[in-house]
Image (tube, rainbow, N blue to C red; front, side):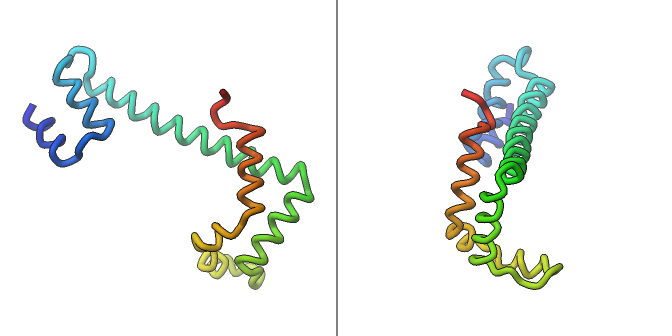
Length: 121
């Protein structure tokens, strides 16, 4: 009981804190195994949807070479093509500001999510 109270003060009102508080009320149903299963479910669900979306995004330009070319051209224009094999320099130039300027890339990602939603409605 004391540990849950300290966690509430330190952590605040996140989902784990709420489960811990609820476990005080009904310890027979909300135990450590139940909490473990809930947390794993959140982690796996997030990983699977992200992986699925990235897979579809790689597939989408492969099936549409014009989109692939336009996206690559936009990246080269904004970030710079650089020397072949200079991946470190490319990563240094790939900033948040550079990503915000890439409207075609954003449109391609959005279209991928529209055509192949991570969680179907």
